[in-house]
Amino acid sequence: MLILPISIFNQPKKQYQNGLFESGLGNNFPIKNDVIKDCISFQSNTSAGNVLKKLRGIKCPYFGVIMISGSELKRIEHQLDKCNCVKDIVKVLSKYKHCMQNTEKKIYTKFVEISQKSPSITLPECLKLLYDEAIIKLKLEEFNVLDDVDKISLNLSPQNALFVHEKTTRCRQIILENNEADTFKRKTLLSSLDEIKPNNKNDEDKILEKLKDRAIYLPTSGTSENAFIVKYVNRSQQEIAKRILRPSVATIEHIQPESFEGQNTIGNFLLASEGANSFRSNMPLYKFIEMFPFIPQKCQNYIEQIINLIHNGQLKGHETYPYKVKQSLAKESNGQIILNLSDYKYSETKALEMEKNCYKKSFKKN
Image (cartoon, rainbow, N blue to C red; front, side, top):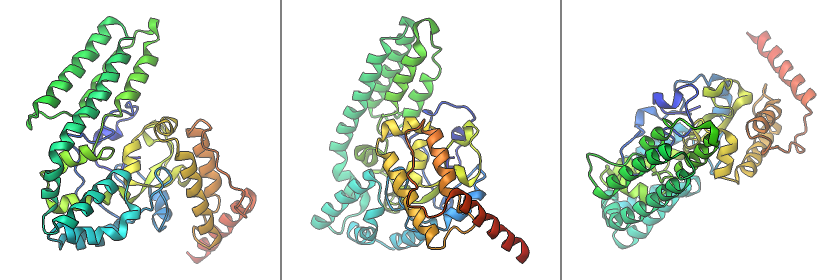
């Protein structure tokens, strides 16, 4: 389901916690210009979702922001390349504030405030103004999560609890040392937690699951404005500016992750923002909903938009899509997402008939 060409995300049956987010203090997984397309999709056959890529103005079914196409992003980035200072960049980005994810919108707001006082400075200079306070707050955010991880680990066997404390202690040392050559990488901690062998006699598998569920809240540049500032303070102006909108690009998302035998069929696809798609990785949907309880309502809003498009003549030949997505979401969310299709004017039988007729017409033309 992932949209970045990184092998760790596509390892079958890997724990979903591994490599979910980029590190708050590291330089992991930078998104380059050449990977942005109309719908970013690598190492996964999502051709059945091509019809979804053509849709415009759709709200992300997970985060609710209006998504932009890859081609539109390229046009915006071309404008950003011509900007010399924060004032110019804010002017370009202001038209797309409604498309920004939460963290990116907060960073954009800070750029707006700085541009009003110092319009001629660059984005790296803006982040340097914010850096000292941001890195302190980021450390506190990280320590809060690590403290919780340690507390949960006390319910493990002494041997496993000690292993966890050794890892979290090393993380704290790295965070406090501020050594650029040895930065704290959350994915390293998450991977190390997968090395623990649970003692089944003590139900440690449940404790470990709770521990990992807490650990994935370690801040990243996609979830924390402080992590964003620390991560990008030494990046180029163009990279920082383009990073604001890239999480809002529309991508093909697997409802049931492909790494867990999810099929590459349109009934298992959503059009979701790159930020949400990457954020979820191959996390079970019911777990994702635990982190973001508003997802069921966002999915309902998404399908209502899809229904309106079908009523207006779009998605021809895919009239059963709402029914298929309803079934997929209900199954993958353990019943937490039950879409209401009462406004859909086509019954499932009628929708299937329309698809067959569309196929027959297409077959005759060919």
